[in-house]
Structures are given as C-alpha cells and as structure tokens.
Image (cartoon, rainbow, N blue to C red):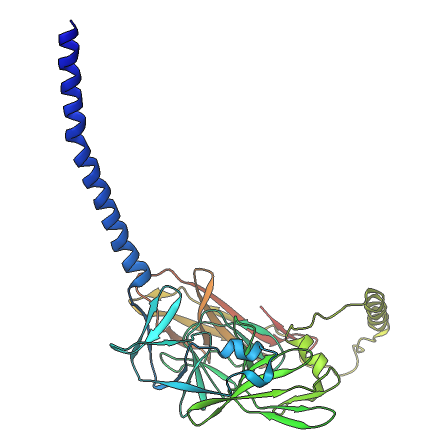
Amino acid sequence: MKKAIKEINKVENKEIKNRMPIFLLAGILLICVALIIFYYIALRYSPINTIMYEGYAVEAKTLTKNLKSENFENVEQSLELLKVEEQETIYQKMSNYYVGGDEKKNIDLNYPIYINEKAAILNLSEDTKIITKNYEKIEGYANFMLAEGKLYNAHDLSKADNNEYILVETKEGTYVAVKEIKIETAIGEYTIPVNSIIYFTEEYITYYQIEEDKLIYNNILEIDGSSKITIETMEEISYEEFLKKIGIIEEQIIIGKEEETEEEEEGQEVTEQKPSQEEPTEAEYIKPTITAKNFEARVYTAQTNIDIEDPQGRITQAIFVIKRGNRTYQRRQILGEGSLELTGLTPETEFEIEGTYRYYNENQIEVEE
C-alpha cells in the first residue's frame, strides 16, 4: 500500500513540473502584450489632426509659467515661434503634442496657430471659451479661426455666427486678445496688440506680444481696480469692472438693492399707458420663425432646407450648433432661406444639431430661442 502511494505522488509531482513551464510561458506572453499595448498608447506618436494652413505655433516650453510668475525680472523675455506647414500632421504622445518629421517638436495646443501673416489665429484646442463684445462666453471648438473679431470654420471658411469677439479664454486661465486693448493707469498708458497672450490679475497684467517670429514679454505692474481699459472701439470701463465681466472677480449682488430695483421697475410697469384705440399705432407684432427640415446625412456632410418667416425684419442672427459627445464640434451661421449644407463632418459619427436664433420681440428686446 505504501509503495502504491509513493508511485501516485511521483506521478502528481511530474505533472506539476510539466505544467509550470506552461504557466511561465503564459505569464511572459501577457507581459509582452502589456508592453506592446503600453508602447502604442503611451510611447507611440499617434496622428490626431492636420494643420490646414501654414503659420506659427507656440512651442511647449514655459509660456504659461512665465506669464504667471511674479518674479518679473527673471522670466524668459523672448520665445521663438515654431514654423508649421500647411497640411502638417499633429501627433500625440501621452498628453503632449508634436509636429515635424524625424525630429519632432513639442507644441502647446492651449494656444493658437498664428496664420495669415499672423493677422489671424487658428484654434486647435477643444478647451477654450470665446468671449463676445457683450462679455458672453461661448464654448470653443477645435478648428475655428478668428480674424478681426469674426469667427469662421477653418475647413471651409464658412462664417460661424454674427458675433463680434474680443478674447479667447484658454484652459490655463490665460487669454488671447482678439482686439487691441488699451490700458490707462495712474502713471501711464499701455497698448496690448491684437493676438497677444495675456494673464490678467487684480494686481498686475503680464503678456507676450508678437514681434516678427517671436513672442516678447511685457508687464503692467501698477494697475488697480480704478485703472481704465478700452477694447478697440468699445466703451471705456474700469479695470475692476472688466475683471468682473470676464469672471476673474466674482460680482457681489446686494439683495436689498436688487429687490428695491425690481419694485421700482414693477411700479413703472403699472403706470405705463397703453396707446388709445383711436390713436394710430405701429403694425401688429408678428413673431418671426425659422424652421429646418430633417437633415439628410451623407459621408462628410449633412443637408437641410431652411424656411424663414420674418416680415418685420426682427431676426438678428440664426445659427446651428453641431455637437459631438456633448461638446461643440462646429458652429454655422444661417444666412438665408433655401438649402444649407453642413460640411467637415466625421464619417460614421453621431452628431446632435441644435438651431437657435435671436430676434427683437414686441418690447424691442433682443431674445434668443
């Protein structure tokens, strides 16, 4: 009996020894697969976009760090812009972006590509906000262009909307000036040129402005809330008010004052006199409408037909906002009735298209729906 047990144990031990190389081989294969996946995800240069126009990019160095540094004398005073070519590929490796052939150079996509002799900017980031002259913040999107305050889609140069823009806000908390900015402090006057990259604070302003193929550092250190700021032809306001409008300073609301104002407005509404039936009145108000038929999807485009009813000319703007995954993919202005084609769409992708328009209502107040 003991001899039989010994023989069984020998057989089991032999089987275990035979299985061990198999487990070892499987482990090595899993490690190899993991290394290959890591290479393709983390170490490989993956093409993600194409630069549609030649221009100059911001090299990923220390621009943001310099702008936010309070050691004003020891920042890089000059940064070289990086030349990029039309149809050049942008690559991603981990969280960094590159251009170039064998010798790839790291670029900062938080900042735009300067195109058209640096008179316009091409945005490639999905994490921007565009600020209108009324200080309305609109979600930015990759591949928009801004020139002279007007917004265009880069792929076909179609007009995105009818707004006039003054700033682009980056995810770094810095801004790109779309219009020239003038600052007047207690001891001097300053001009920040168009397309400068700016960092605003309550105590100081730092910025890089374009000079030839370089970004040159400047600062305004004696600024305070009472300083004056003028953006091109807009009305001059205090620097404090400006910071509130762009959201750097939170605007405090005094509840008592607000209630008092509302009561005054309500009182005024009660005392308003309606025009007499015998007196001549303006034409009866007709609400304008815009309707679009269902979109016909194609490979790279989608087409619809637009009908507009606006006999009194009250519509000021109409646009489509195309979204992909809850983010703005494109904006497109509706210029009139008839066929409208949306271009530059990605094949086999689901898009949500939302139409909005602005018009003056019966009280001559501009509203949106």
